[in-house]
Amino acid sequence: MPKITHPHITSDPGICGGSAVIGGTRFPVRSVVAYVLHHGLTPEELVVRFPHLTLAQVHDALAYYYDNREEVEQEITENTERQVRERRAF
Image 1 (cartoon, rainbow, N blue to C red):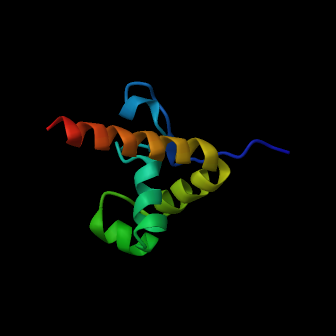
Image 2 (image 1 turned 180 degrees about the vertical axis):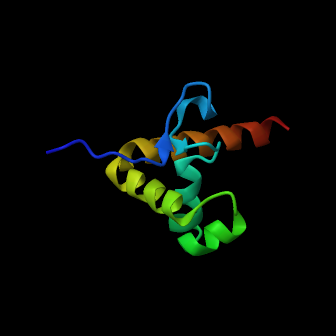
């Protein structure tokens, strides 16, 4: 089976800790997943809220998620736990 590519998704250790992001932005795939799958926004609503994103980028981020679900879910869990710890510190 050929390797699946996601032309709008990049990962760089110097950007968002190496998390998968939409290329040319600091917008993590995990945030797209949160807005669309957890909060119920449509991809169209997401690009209205974040006009620097394109519909193609959002759909590619969702495709990346479905191809790498375990990895992205782990990032979501770790990010949520970190936010909880940071809130408790204040």
